[in-house]
Image (tube, rainbow, N blue to C red):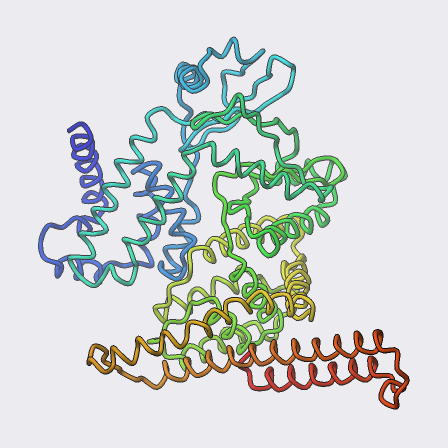
Length: 550
Protein backbone atom coordinates (compact mmCIF):
# COMPACT_ATOMS: atom_id res chain seq x y z
CA UNK A 1 0.00 0.00 0.00
CA UNK A 2 2.85 2.40 0.81
CA UNK A 3 4.40 1.71 -2.59
CA UNK A 4 1.11 2.36 -4.39
CA UNK A 5 0.58 5.53 -2.37
CA UNK A 6 4.07 6.81 -3.25
CA UNK A 7 3.43 6.05 -6.91
CA UNK A 8 0.12 7.92 -6.82
CA UNK A 9 1.65 10.99 -5.20
CA UNK A 10 4.62 11.01 -7.58
CA UNK A 11 2.37 10.38 -10.58
CA UNK A 12 0.26 13.43 -9.68
CA UNK A 13 3.42 15.56 -9.45
CA UNK A 14 4.74 14.29 -12.80
CA UNK A 15 1.37 14.72 -14.50
CA UNK A 16 0.98 18.30 -13.34
CA UNK A 17 4.49 19.19 -14.55
CA UNK A 18 3.87 17.51 -17.93
CA UNK A 19 0.58 19.33 -18.44
CA UNK A 20 2.08 22.67 -17.38
CA UNK A 21 4.97 22.16 -19.80
CA UNK A 22 2.75 21.30 -22.77
CA UNK A 23 3.40 17.55 -22.78
CA UNK A 24 0.06 16.46 -21.39
CA UNK A 25 -0.57 14.24 -24.42
CA UNK A 26 1.89 11.74 -22.93
CA UNK A 27 -0.64 10.91 -20.20
CA UNK A 28 -3.83 11.70 -22.11
CA UNK A 29 -6.50 9.25 -21.02
CA UNK A 30 -8.42 9.62 -24.31
CA UNK A 31 -7.88 7.49 -27.38
CA UNK A 32 -4.54 7.33 -29.14
CA UNK A 33 -5.69 9.80 -31.84
CA UNK A 34 -5.23 12.70 -29.44
CA UNK A 35 -1.69 11.65 -28.63
CA UNK A 36 -0.87 11.16 -32.31
CA UNK A 37 -2.28 14.58 -33.21
CA UNK A 38 -0.37 16.29 -30.39
CA UNK A 39 2.85 14.54 -31.32
CA UNK A 40 2.47 15.48 -34.98
CA UNK A 41 1.72 19.08 -34.06
CA UNK A 42 4.77 19.28 -31.78
CA UNK A 43 7.42 21.66 -33.06
CA UNK A 44 10.34 19.38 -32.27
CA UNK A 45 13.11 21.75 -33.47
CA UNK A 46 12.10 24.30 -30.83
CA UNK A 47 10.92 21.75 -28.25
CA UNK A 48 14.41 20.57 -27.25
CA UNK A 49 14.97 23.32 -24.70
CA UNK A 50 11.54 22.77 -23.12
CA UNK A 51 12.23 19.03 -22.87
CA UNK A 52 15.58 19.68 -21.18
CA UNK A 53 14.09 22.06 -18.62
CA UNK A 54 11.23 19.64 -18.02
CA UNK A 55 13.61 16.76 -17.29
CA UNK A 56 15.72 18.88 -14.94
CA UNK A 57 12.58 19.87 -13.03
CA UNK A 58 11.44 16.25 -12.72
CA UNK A 59 14.68 15.22 -11.02
CA UNK A 60 17.33 12.50 -10.97
CA UNK A 61 15.55 9.70 -12.83
CA UNK A 62 14.44 11.96 -15.66
CA UNK A 63 17.83 13.67 -15.92
CA UNK A 64 19.36 10.22 -16.39
CA UNK A 65 16.63 9.41 -18.93
CA UNK A 66 17.59 12.52 -20.89
CA UNK A 67 21.29 11.69 -20.69
CA UNK A 68 20.55 8.20 -21.97
CA UNK A 69 18.38 9.58 -24.77
CA UNK A 70 21.22 11.93 -25.72
CA UNK A 71 23.21 8.82 -26.69
CA UNK A 72 20.46 7.63 -29.06
CA UNK A 73 20.63 9.68 -32.28
CA UNK A 74 18.95 6.71 -33.95
CA UNK A 75 15.82 7.42 -31.86
CA UNK A 76 15.81 11.14 -31.12
CA UNK A 77 15.88 14.06 -33.59
CA UNK A 78 19.15 16.01 -33.75
CA UNK A 79 17.42 19.23 -32.67
CA UNK A 80 16.43 17.59 -29.39
CA UNK A 81 19.80 15.88 -28.92
CA UNK A 82 21.59 19.24 -28.98
CA UNK A 83 19.62 20.27 -25.91
CA UNK A 84 19.80 16.93 -24.09
CA UNK A 85 23.60 17.01 -24.05
CA UNK A 86 23.30 20.23 -22.00
CA UNK A 87 21.44 18.50 -19.18
CA UNK A 88 22.88 19.61 -15.87
CA UNK A 89 23.50 16.91 -13.30
CA UNK A 90 24.75 19.35 -10.65
CA UNK A 91 22.27 19.96 -7.81
CA UNK A 92 22.58 21.58 -4.36
CA UNK A 93 24.29 19.38 -1.74
CA UNK A 94 22.32 17.67 0.99
CA UNK A 95 23.02 18.42 4.70
CA UNK A 96 26.04 17.00 6.50
CA UNK A 97 23.71 15.44 9.09
CA UNK A 98 22.33 13.20 6.33
CA UNK A 99 25.90 12.37 5.25
CA UNK A 100 26.73 11.22 8.78
CA UNK A 101 23.54 9.18 9.05
CA UNK A 102 24.06 7.37 5.72
CA UNK A 103 27.69 6.51 6.58
CA UNK A 104 26.75 5.17 10.01
CA UNK A 105 23.87 3.10 8.55
CA UNK A 106 26.06 1.66 5.80
CA UNK A 107 29.40 1.17 7.59
CA UNK A 108 28.12 0.49 11.11
CA UNK A 109 30.12 3.18 12.91
CA UNK A 110 30.10 6.97 13.23
CA UNK A 111 32.35 9.15 11.09
CA UNK A 112 34.55 10.05 14.07
CA UNK A 113 35.58 6.40 14.50
CA UNK A 114 36.04 5.58 10.81
CA UNK A 115 37.99 8.68 9.74
CA UNK A 116 40.68 10.83 11.31
CA UNK A 117 39.23 13.90 9.55
CA UNK A 118 36.17 14.37 7.35
CA UNK A 119 35.40 17.67 5.58
CA UNK A 120 31.81 18.74 6.05
CA UNK A 121 31.61 20.68 2.77
CA UNK A 122 31.47 18.44 -0.33
CA UNK A 123 34.01 18.69 -3.14
CA UNK A 124 31.28 17.98 -5.71
CA UNK A 125 27.54 17.39 -5.70
CA UNK A 126 25.39 15.61 -8.30
CA UNK A 127 21.89 14.20 -8.58
CA UNK A 128 22.88 10.76 -7.27
CA UNK A 129 25.40 11.66 -4.58
CA UNK A 130 28.16 13.95 -3.41
CA UNK A 131 31.87 13.58 -2.68
CA UNK A 132 33.69 14.59 0.52
CA UNK A 133 37.41 14.68 1.19
CA UNK A 134 38.60 12.74 4.24
CA UNK A 135 41.60 11.10 5.90
CA UNK A 136 41.59 7.53 7.21
CA UNK A 137 42.95 6.67 10.62
CA UNK A 138 46.15 5.37 8.99
CA UNK A 139 46.73 8.78 7.35
CA UNK A 140 45.65 7.94 3.78
CA UNK A 141 43.78 10.70 1.97
CA UNK A 142 40.52 9.51 0.46
CA UNK A 143 37.47 10.76 -1.45
CA UNK A 144 34.17 9.48 -0.05
CA UNK A 145 31.10 9.35 -2.26
CA UNK A 146 27.77 9.25 -0.41
CA UNK A 147 24.43 8.55 -2.06
CA UNK A 148 21.49 10.88 -1.48
CA UNK A 149 19.09 9.72 1.25
CA UNK A 150 15.89 8.01 0.02
CA UNK A 151 17.11 8.26 -3.57
CA UNK A 152 16.70 4.55 -4.32
CA UNK A 153 13.03 4.67 -3.27
CA UNK A 154 12.33 7.72 -5.44
CA UNK A 155 14.12 6.22 -8.44
CA UNK A 156 12.25 2.93 -8.09
CA UNK A 157 8.94 4.82 -7.99
CA UNK A 158 9.86 6.91 -11.04
CA UNK A 159 10.96 3.85 -13.00
CA UNK A 160 7.67 2.09 -12.26
CA UNK A 161 5.77 5.17 -13.44
CA UNK A 162 7.89 5.51 -16.59
CA UNK A 163 7.36 1.85 -17.42
CA UNK A 164 3.61 2.32 -17.03
CA UNK A 165 3.63 5.45 -19.20
CA UNK A 166 5.65 3.66 -21.89
CA UNK A 167 3.23 0.73 -21.96
CA UNK A 168 0.31 3.17 -22.09
CA UNK A 169 1.87 5.02 -25.02
CA UNK A 170 2.45 1.74 -26.87
CA UNK A 171 -1.23 0.87 -26.50
CA UNK A 172 -2.52 4.32 -27.50
CA UNK A 173 -1.01 4.55 -30.98
CA UNK A 174 1.84 4.00 -33.35
CA UNK A 175 3.57 7.31 -32.58
CA UNK A 176 5.65 5.74 -29.76
CA UNK A 177 6.79 2.81 -31.87
CA UNK A 178 9.40 4.91 -33.67
CA UNK A 179 10.87 5.95 -30.29
CA UNK A 180 10.79 2.43 -28.74
CA UNK A 181 9.76 3.91 -25.40
CA UNK A 182 9.39 0.60 -23.58
CA UNK A 183 12.89 -0.54 -24.53
CA UNK A 184 14.38 2.86 -23.68
CA UNK A 185 12.82 2.70 -20.19
CA UNK A 186 14.12 -0.84 -19.69
CA UNK A 187 17.60 0.28 -20.71
CA UNK A 188 17.35 3.27 -18.37
CA UNK A 189 16.32 1.01 -15.50
CA UNK A 190 19.33 -1.26 -15.97
CA UNK A 191 21.79 1.64 -16.21
CA UNK A 192 20.36 3.67 -13.35
CA UNK A 193 19.93 0.79 -10.89
CA UNK A 194 23.53 -0.27 -11.61
CA UNK A 195 24.71 3.30 -10.98
CA UNK A 196 22.88 3.35 -7.64
CA UNK A 197 24.88 0.35 -6.42
CA UNK A 198 28.32 1.68 -5.49
CA UNK A 199 29.59 -1.89 -5.11
CA UNK A 200 29.43 -2.22 -8.89
CA UNK A 201 31.39 1.00 -9.33
CA UNK A 202 34.00 -0.34 -6.90
CA UNK A 203 34.30 -3.48 -9.05
CA UNK A 204 34.67 -1.29 -12.15
CA UNK A 205 37.46 0.71 -10.53
CA UNK A 206 39.36 -2.45 -9.60
CA UNK A 207 38.94 -3.91 -13.09
CA UNK A 208 40.12 -0.77 -14.86
CA UNK A 209 43.05 -0.48 -12.45
CA UNK A 210 44.19 -4.01 -13.39
CA UNK A 211 43.81 -3.22 -17.10
CA UNK A 212 45.90 -0.04 -16.67
CA UNK A 213 48.76 -1.77 -14.84
CA UNK A 214 50.86 -1.88 -18.02
CA UNK A 215 50.15 1.75 -18.95
CA UNK A 216 52.49 3.99 -17.01
CA UNK A 217 50.63 7.23 -17.74
CA UNK A 218 47.13 6.22 -16.54
CA UNK A 219 46.00 6.35 -12.89
CA UNK A 220 42.82 4.79 -11.52
CA UNK A 221 41.84 5.51 -7.89
CA UNK A 222 42.27 2.57 -5.52
CA UNK A 223 39.18 1.35 -3.68
CA UNK A 224 39.05 0.88 0.10
CA UNK A 225 36.57 -1.98 0.47
CA UNK A 226 36.23 -1.90 4.31
CA UNK A 227 34.96 1.69 3.98
CA UNK A 228 32.63 1.06 1.04
CA UNK A 229 29.13 -0.35 0.65
CA UNK A 230 26.07 -0.08 -1.57
CA UNK A 231 25.60 3.63 -0.79
CA UNK A 232 29.13 4.65 0.27
CA UNK A 233 32.26 4.44 -1.86
CA UNK A 234 35.69 5.32 -0.43
CA UNK A 235 38.48 5.81 -2.98
CA UNK A 236 42.03 7.03 -3.13
CA UNK A 237 42.19 10.83 -3.30
CA UNK A 238 44.15 11.96 -6.36
CA UNK A 239 45.32 15.57 -6.60
CA UNK A 240 45.45 16.90 -10.16
CA UNK A 241 44.44 19.67 -12.54
CA UNK A 242 41.01 19.63 -14.14
CA UNK A 243 41.04 19.48 -17.93
CA UNK A 244 38.85 22.55 -18.08
CA UNK A 245 41.65 24.64 -16.49
CA UNK A 246 43.78 25.08 -19.63
CA UNK A 247 45.63 28.12 -18.24
CA UNK A 248 46.87 26.18 -15.22
CA UNK A 249 47.92 23.27 -17.44
CA UNK A 250 50.05 25.60 -19.55
CA UNK A 251 51.48 27.31 -16.45
CA UNK A 252 52.64 23.90 -15.17
CA UNK A 253 54.36 23.16 -18.49
CA UNK A 254 51.90 20.39 -19.41
CA UNK A 255 51.97 19.49 -23.12
CA UNK A 256 48.29 19.46 -23.93
CA UNK A 257 48.84 17.67 -27.26
CA UNK A 258 50.44 14.75 -25.39
CA UNK A 259 47.58 14.69 -22.91
CA UNK A 260 45.05 14.67 -25.78
CA UNK A 261 46.77 11.72 -27.45
CA UNK A 262 46.96 9.76 -24.20
CA UNK A 263 43.30 10.31 -23.37
CA UNK A 264 42.19 9.23 -26.85
CA UNK A 265 44.55 6.24 -26.85
CA UNK A 266 43.30 5.11 -23.43
CA UNK A 267 39.62 5.28 -24.42
CA UNK A 268 40.19 3.41 -27.70
CA UNK A 269 42.30 0.80 -25.91
CA UNK A 270 39.36 0.23 -23.57
CA UNK A 271 36.81 0.09 -26.43
CA UNK A 272 38.67 -1.94 -29.05
CA UNK A 273 40.93 -4.15 -26.91
CA UNK A 274 39.58 -4.44 -23.37
CA UNK A 275 35.90 -4.45 -24.32
CA UNK A 276 35.01 -2.41 -21.20
CA UNK A 277 35.24 1.36 -21.36
CA UNK A 278 34.55 4.59 -19.47
CA UNK A 279 31.21 5.74 -20.88
CA UNK A 280 31.33 9.31 -19.54
CA UNK A 281 34.87 10.74 -19.95
CA UNK A 282 33.87 14.41 -19.65
CA UNK A 283 36.41 16.99 -18.37
CA UNK A 284 35.20 16.70 -14.79
CA UNK A 285 36.07 12.99 -14.75
CA UNK A 286 39.68 13.40 -15.95
CA UNK A 287 42.59 14.90 -14.03
CA UNK A 288 46.06 15.75 -15.36
CA UNK A 289 49.01 14.89 -13.14
CA UNK A 290 52.71 15.85 -13.39
CA UNK A 291 54.49 14.20 -16.31
CA UNK A 292 51.36 14.38 -18.47
CA UNK A 293 49.81 11.46 -16.57
CA UNK A 294 46.02 11.23 -16.60
CA UNK A 295 43.66 10.01 -13.88
CA UNK A 296 40.19 8.70 -14.75
CA UNK A 297 37.45 9.21 -12.18
CA UNK A 298 33.78 8.24 -11.69
CA UNK A 299 33.14 4.79 -13.14
CA UNK A 300 29.42 4.78 -12.40
CA UNK A 301 28.63 4.61 -16.12
CA UNK A 302 30.58 1.89 -17.91
CA UNK A 303 30.01 0.40 -21.35
CA UNK A 304 30.75 -3.13 -22.54
CA UNK A 305 31.34 -4.67 -25.96
CA UNK A 306 31.18 -8.35 -26.87
CA UNK A 307 34.13 -9.89 -28.73
CA UNK A 308 31.97 -10.05 -31.88
CA UNK A 309 31.06 -6.35 -31.66
CA UNK A 310 34.67 -5.37 -30.91
CA UNK A 311 35.90 -7.20 -33.99
CA UNK A 312 33.42 -5.67 -36.41
CA UNK A 313 33.58 -2.22 -34.82
CA UNK A 314 37.32 -2.25 -35.57
CA UNK A 315 36.44 -3.05 -39.20
CA UNK A 316 33.92 -0.22 -39.09
CA UNK A 317 36.60 2.25 -37.90
CA UNK A 318 38.91 1.19 -40.74
CA UNK A 319 36.10 1.59 -43.28
CA UNK A 320 35.38 5.10 -41.96
CA UNK A 321 39.09 5.91 -42.11
CA UNK A 322 39.25 4.71 -45.72
CA UNK A 323 35.94 6.41 -46.56
CA UNK A 324 34.63 3.11 -47.92
CA UNK A 325 30.84 2.95 -48.23
CA UNK A 326 30.93 -0.78 -48.97
CA UNK A 327 33.15 -1.35 -45.95
CA UNK A 328 30.75 0.60 -43.72
CA UNK A 329 27.79 -1.37 -45.05
CA UNK A 330 29.54 -4.69 -44.46
CA UNK A 331 30.55 -3.67 -40.95
CA UNK A 332 27.10 -2.52 -39.84
CA UNK A 333 25.56 -5.65 -41.38
CA UNK A 334 27.92 -7.85 -39.37
CA UNK A 335 27.02 -5.79 -36.31
CA UNK A 336 23.42 -6.91 -36.81
CA UNK A 337 22.05 -3.42 -37.37
CA UNK A 338 20.27 -3.93 -40.71
CA UNK A 339 16.89 -5.70 -40.52
CA UNK A 340 15.47 -7.54 -43.52
CA UNK A 341 12.76 -4.97 -44.28
CA UNK A 342 15.21 -2.10 -44.84
CA UNK A 343 15.64 -0.89 -48.40
CA UNK A 344 19.34 -1.62 -48.76
CA UNK A 345 19.70 0.32 -51.99
CA UNK A 346 18.41 3.52 -50.40
CA UNK A 347 20.47 2.85 -47.28
CA UNK A 348 23.63 2.44 -49.36
CA UNK A 349 22.87 5.68 -51.19
CA UNK A 350 22.57 7.53 -47.87
CA UNK A 351 25.82 5.99 -46.60
CA UNK A 352 27.48 7.00 -49.87
CA UNK A 353 26.15 10.54 -49.47
CA UNK A 354 27.56 10.63 -45.94
CA UNK A 355 30.93 9.43 -47.27
CA UNK A 356 30.92 12.15 -49.93
CA UNK A 357 30.37 14.75 -47.22
CA UNK A 358 33.76 13.89 -45.70
CA UNK A 359 35.62 12.92 -48.90
CA UNK A 360 37.46 16.19 -49.57
CA UNK A 361 37.88 17.12 -45.90
CA UNK A 362 41.47 16.81 -44.58
CA UNK A 363 41.78 13.91 -42.17
CA UNK A 364 42.82 16.13 -39.26
CA UNK A 365 39.54 18.05 -39.62
CA UNK A 366 37.37 14.92 -39.68
CA UNK A 367 35.59 14.33 -36.38
CA UNK A 368 34.91 10.66 -35.72
CA UNK A 369 32.09 11.53 -33.33
CA UNK A 370 30.38 13.60 -36.02
CA UNK A 371 30.71 10.72 -38.48
CA UNK A 372 29.16 8.33 -35.97
CA UNK A 373 26.35 10.77 -35.28
CA UNK A 374 25.71 11.11 -39.01
CA UNK A 375 25.61 7.34 -39.33
CA UNK A 376 23.18 7.08 -36.42
CA UNK A 377 21.11 9.77 -38.14
CA UNK A 378 20.96 7.59 -41.26
CA UNK A 379 19.86 4.71 -39.03
CA UNK A 380 17.12 6.92 -37.56
CA UNK A 381 15.94 7.81 -41.07
CA UNK A 382 15.62 4.16 -42.07
CA UNK A 383 14.11 2.98 -38.80
CA UNK A 384 17.20 0.95 -37.86
CA UNK A 385 17.70 0.23 -34.17
CA UNK A 386 21.33 0.72 -33.18
CA UNK A 387 22.45 -1.69 -30.41
CA UNK A 388 22.66 0.13 -27.09
CA UNK A 389 26.28 -0.95 -26.61
CA UNK A 390 27.19 0.92 -29.81
CA UNK A 391 25.33 4.08 -28.82
CA UNK A 392 27.28 4.02 -25.55
CA UNK A 393 30.47 3.78 -27.62
CA UNK A 394 29.29 6.73 -29.71
CA UNK A 395 28.66 8.80 -26.58
CA UNK A 396 32.08 7.96 -25.15
CA UNK A 397 33.87 8.81 -28.41
CA UNK A 398 31.89 12.01 -28.92
CA UNK A 399 32.65 13.17 -25.36
CA UNK A 400 36.33 12.26 -25.69
CA UNK A 401 36.57 14.08 -29.00
CA UNK A 402 35.18 17.23 -27.43
CA UNK A 403 37.71 16.95 -24.60
CA UNK A 404 40.77 16.47 -26.84
CA UNK A 405 39.60 19.22 -29.24
CA UNK A 406 39.91 21.70 -26.36
CA UNK A 407 43.41 20.43 -25.60
CA UNK A 408 44.63 20.25 -29.21
CA UNK A 409 42.34 21.62 -31.97
CA UNK A 410 44.44 19.89 -34.68
CA UNK A 411 44.22 16.45 -33.07
CA UNK A 412 42.33 13.72 -34.99
CA UNK A 413 40.83 10.77 -33.12
CA UNK A 414 41.10 8.71 -36.30
CA UNK A 415 44.90 8.92 -36.09
CA UNK A 416 44.70 7.03 -32.79
CA UNK A 417 41.77 4.73 -33.52
CA UNK A 418 42.82 3.52 -36.97
CA UNK A 419 46.18 1.91 -35.99
CA UNK A 420 44.53 0.03 -33.10
CA UNK A 421 41.69 -1.13 -35.34
CA UNK A 422 44.10 -2.15 -38.10
CA UNK A 423 46.24 -4.12 -35.65
CA UNK A 424 43.18 -6.04 -34.48
CA UNK A 425 42.11 -6.57 -38.09
CA UNK A 426 45.52 -7.98 -39.03
CA UNK A 427 45.47 -10.27 -36.01
CA UNK A 428 42.26 -11.75 -37.39
CA UNK A 429 44.10 -12.52 -40.66
CA UNK A 430 47.02 -14.14 -38.87
CA UNK A 431 47.12 -17.79 -40.12
CA UNK A 432 47.75 -19.16 -36.63
CA UNK A 433 44.81 -17.25 -35.15
CA UNK A 434 42.78 -18.31 -38.15
CA UNK A 435 43.66 -22.01 -37.66
CA UNK A 436 43.14 -21.77 -33.90
CA UNK A 437 39.63 -20.38 -34.32
CA UNK A 438 38.85 -22.94 -37.03
CA UNK A 439 39.98 -25.95 -34.99
CA UNK A 440 37.99 -24.64 -32.01
CA UNK A 441 34.86 -24.89 -34.19
CA UNK A 442 35.58 -28.42 -35.49
CA UNK A 443 33.87 -30.20 -32.52
CA UNK A 444 30.74 -28.16 -33.17
CA UNK A 445 30.75 -29.11 -36.85
CA UNK A 446 31.38 -32.79 -36.04
CA UNK A 447 28.49 -32.72 -33.58
CA UNK A 448 26.23 -31.27 -36.27
CA UNK A 449 27.28 -34.00 -38.71
CA UNK A 450 26.79 -36.77 -36.12
CA UNK A 451 23.30 -35.50 -35.30
CA UNK A 452 22.31 -35.06 -38.94
CA UNK A 453 20.97 -38.64 -39.56
CA UNK A 454 18.73 -38.53 -36.52
CA UNK A 455 17.55 -35.03 -37.38
CA UNK A 456 16.74 -36.07 -40.96
CA UNK A 457 14.87 -39.14 -39.73
CA UNK A 458 12.72 -37.07 -37.35
CA UNK A 459 12.12 -34.51 -40.08
CA UNK A 460 11.02 -37.25 -42.52
CA UNK A 461 8.60 -38.71 -39.99
CA UNK A 462 7.08 -35.26 -39.31
CA UNK A 463 6.79 -34.59 -43.06
CA UNK A 464 5.03 -37.92 -43.61
CA UNK A 465 2.57 -37.08 -40.84
CA UNK A 466 1.92 -33.67 -42.37
CA UNK A 467 3.06 -31.81 -39.24
CA UNK A 468 5.39 -29.44 -41.08
CA UNK A 469 4.42 -26.68 -43.45
CA UNK A 470 7.35 -25.45 -45.49
CA UNK A 471 7.40 -21.93 -46.87
CA UNK A 472 10.43 -21.08 -48.99
CA UNK A 473 11.38 -17.42 -49.47
CA UNK A 474 14.25 -16.55 -51.78
CA UNK A 475 16.35 -14.27 -49.47
CA UNK A 476 16.25 -16.77 -46.61
CA UNK A 477 17.04 -19.64 -49.00
CA UNK A 478 20.06 -17.79 -50.31
CA UNK A 479 21.29 -17.11 -46.79
CA UNK A 480 20.83 -20.78 -45.89
CA UNK A 481 22.80 -21.87 -48.95
CA UNK A 482 25.59 -19.46 -48.05
CA UNK A 483 25.74 -20.79 -44.50
CA UNK A 484 25.82 -24.40 -45.74
CA UNK A 485 28.59 -23.48 -48.20
CA UNK A 486 30.54 -21.87 -45.41
CA UNK A 487 30.22 -24.90 -43.14
CA UNK A 488 31.12 -27.36 -45.92
CA UNK A 489 34.14 -25.28 -46.96
CA UNK A 490 35.40 -25.11 -43.41
CA UNK A 491 34.90 -28.86 -42.89
CA UNK A 492 36.58 -29.66 -46.21
CA UNK A 493 39.52 -27.48 -45.28
CA UNK A 494 39.85 -29.15 -41.89
CA UNK A 495 39.63 -32.70 -43.31
CA UNK A 496 42.17 -32.03 -46.09
CA UNK A 497 44.65 -30.51 -43.66
CA UNK A 498 44.16 -33.39 -41.23
CA UNK A 499 44.69 -35.95 -43.99
CA UNK A 500 47.87 -34.24 -45.21
CA UNK A 501 49.17 -34.09 -41.67
CA UNK A 502 48.58 -37.84 -41.22
CA UNK A 503 50.30 -38.66 -44.54
CA UNK A 504 53.33 -36.58 -43.67
CA UNK A 505 53.47 -38.10 -40.21
CA UNK A 506 53.33 -41.59 -41.71
CA UNK A 507 56.14 -40.81 -44.14
CA UNK A 508 58.35 -39.46 -41.39
CA UNK A 509 57.71 -42.41 -39.05
CA UNK A 510 58.12 -44.95 -41.86
CA UNK A 511 61.38 -43.53 -43.05
CA UNK A 512 62.78 -43.30 -39.54
CA UNK A 513 61.82 -46.91 -38.63
CA UNK A 514 62.80 -48.74 -41.81
CA UNK A 515 65.97 -46.87 -42.64
CA UNK A 516 65.76 -48.53 -46.10
CA UNK A 517 67.49 -46.72 -48.95
CA UNK A 518 65.02 -47.01 -51.84
CA UNK A 519 64.56 -44.68 -54.75
CA UNK A 520 61.53 -43.25 -52.95
CA UNK A 521 63.40 -42.55 -49.71
CA UNK A 522 66.35 -41.00 -51.55
CA UNK A 523 64.03 -38.18 -52.49
CA UNK A 524 63.49 -35.32 -49.98
CA UNK A 525 59.98 -36.59 -49.12
CA UNK A 526 59.50 -34.39 -46.08
CA UNK A 527 60.40 -31.22 -47.96
CA UNK A 528 58.26 -32.24 -50.94
CA UNK A 529 55.35 -33.02 -48.65
CA UNK A 530 55.62 -29.65 -46.92
CA UNK A 531 55.74 -27.82 -50.25
CA UNK A 532 52.70 -29.75 -51.54
CA UNK A 533 50.84 -29.03 -48.28
CA UNK A 534 51.58 -25.32 -48.49
CA UNK A 535 50.50 -25.19 -52.15
CA UNK A 536 47.24 -27.01 -51.40
CA UNK A 537 46.69 -24.88 -48.32
CA UNK A 538 47.20 -21.68 -50.36
CA UNK A 539 44.98 -22.90 -53.22
CA UNK A 540 42.19 -23.95 -50.89
CA UNK A 541 42.28 -20.67 -48.99
CA UNK A 542 42.23 -18.72 -52.26
CA UNK A 543 39.29 -20.72 -53.60
CA UNK A 544 37.22 -20.36 -50.44
CA UNK A 545 37.93 -16.66 -49.92
CA UNK A 546 37.25 -15.97 -53.60
CA UNK A 547 33.82 -17.52 -53.19
CA UNK A 548 33.20 -15.12 -50.30
CA UNK A 549 31.62 -17.90 -48.25
CA UNK A 550 34.14 -18.83 -45.64
